[in-house]
Image (cartoon, rainbow, N blue to C red; front, side, top):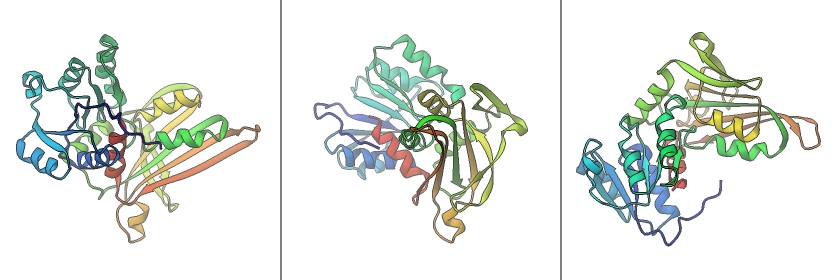
Length: 298
């Protein structure tokens, strides 16, 4: 994963709405580490929580954000980019960002909820970038998958298996987002034999094999990774399976971790059959990887 600094000419701050939550704390920490001179605004619903979060990051300032107020209650404040770390059902933040010609990143909408962002960009394509950031942990599965895919001349199958420990840290917004994405509509998108298919009901039940080899009950899940990997690689079979339970490290008596297993099958550059299984884990759980993905986008 290549990390590049934000242009030194960038003077306007980056606004992180939801920056007082778990993902927000990691995102601001990484953003400050990668870009020491970029001003950061941490937006929250109340001054106290935003102030506490801002006090922990050098060069960060708190602001109160009200989705129902004109201009989010921020007046004519100018920003260079906005990251929304919760589900904004009103679309107010995205509209405000486009009015300010500021790039916008959202990490909450599921595949079935992308219409708002797609329509906003279509009507103002020259305003600023609109980043669809609802890949698993904001790119933690897709970015390495694309890197590993370079070993293949042709990819026939991509299967991502993710293990989310039930004792992992969840902020209230993150838990609500996950529950909504998992259960709203009770459908999941996969690509099978080159065709897109929606699975529902019992058809979403599956299994994953954790890093330690344990088979776990899972469900087909459809973060943006499914669309991204299918179109980037041309693989006719792409799916994502998510298990929630005990991670391999905790099963061995250690701390909670998050697991991503990337299964690839196809042909190498000499035309020979090739199958690869890569495992990614983080001992801090899901939040550090999610925060890292947010921090790399601006």
